Amino acid sequence: MSSPVTSESGVDAVDAVGPSHERRRNPAVALAVIAVCQLMTILDATVVNIALPTIQKALDFSTTQLSWVLSGYTVTFGGLLLLGGRAGDILGRRRVFMTGIAVFTIASLVGGFATNPAWLLSTRALQGLGAALASPNALSLIATNFEAGEERNRAFGLFAAVSGAGSALGLILGGMLTSWASWRWVLFINVPIGVILLALAPRFVRESTPHPGRFDLAGAITSTTGMAALVYAFIRAASDGWRDQWTIGAFIVAGVTLTAYIFIELRASQPITPLQLFRERDRTACYLTMLLSAATLFGIYYFMVQFLQEVRGFSPIRAGLAFLPFTLILIVSAQAAASLVNKVGPRLLMIIGGVFVAGGMFYLAQVGPDSGYTPDVLVPLALMGLGSGIVFVPVTLVALNGVEAASGAASGLLDATQQVGSSLGLAVMVTAFGTAGRHVTPLPGASAAQQQVHVLGEAVGDALLVGACFAACAILVALLVFRGRGGQLDLDAAASRGIVD
Image 1 (spheres, rainbow, N blue to C red):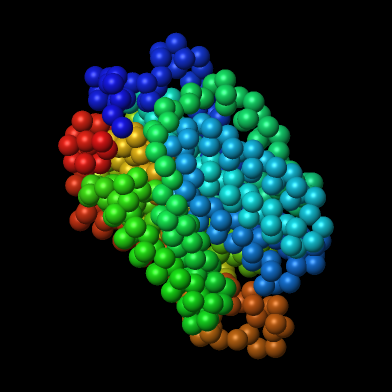
Image 2: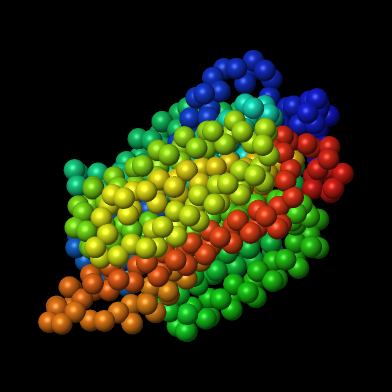
């Protein structure tokens, strides 16, 4: 799949950036389209969090059904990411990117009019499909539209900031929309954004050169089934426990299908995910770091939103705005990391960022019923925002370094590890919370509701301590596994190692 035209840096000049006059049309708008799409798909995993109590009353959800407003989106998003990335490599990344935006936008419009649980849950699953098509191709389109080096690093820096801050922004936006308008607007808000993106993308975002091939149907079926089952298993474990028969069954299905997927990919002439990606030790370390980082952060959103509202008495909008310092600091630190990555190297940034994240998590794990927002929550959130921005940029750069022909598959795999990590982290932290909660001394004469708030305030620190351990493991990966390669793309070196052909 080599291109006949190669730039001095070894990057496929046509596939990477296209003719210079096209690239100069307005790269800022192209980046805005890509980043806003990513923001829309990421924040949709959390934007409904704060609206859940209102949705439950409006549509008469049972407690069990309500969790699937979140999980229905996460399962389809995580399960179809690998397929979405590979489709972009074969059919053209902008084409699949726009298809995903269209599906996501239509699902958001239809879901906003939902009058019963089945209607809303089906459209949430359809949103997940759209996100799985758009998100991996949004990331790989940066390589298509920006030159290797500082220009592309800055673009990746903004993209990483948006990806890292999207979940927290979802909490802020969800609080505002729920308080000021209606829960339906957490879905309707996507419609005008999607329409604008669909109008701008053909004009400002350059299409990649399709790499002719055929879909690996066996690999697609086993990877999609396996990833969906794995994400579902972790979600089920978080809500029903690790011994639940459906949890165990889902893990068995995931194990069998993902094992079959690996064997199929080893023998496939055109695999849905080239396993040569894992020949690179640094790339594998980045996938593992993303998994651990997602496991750390997603649990924070889940527990701290409840803590701030139930224990500290915050309103929905105030609870959302409590994450604003985290978000703003992450965006700034990601841009700084993009400027520094070629000067100090990705390994040092991953270690420094990891130390800030782990330190912030250990600090936050000391939270209790008497803790205030300042400094007990604000300071650790600021530390984690600083560290997350520093970590995400080198992880994203190195994970996609030297895989132009398969960047859709590589970015799909990166997104998939983020989804699995989020589900894994939440499941483990919920288990730790439940274990700690059973040992909390009951309040004498307290009602069931008061007792529940008491347990939340006392046991949340134990759950967050598990998240701090995930963050510490990410530091160990950077220290012991990652060898430290620069952020510049190097297709020739990658080809010599068999990563691209």
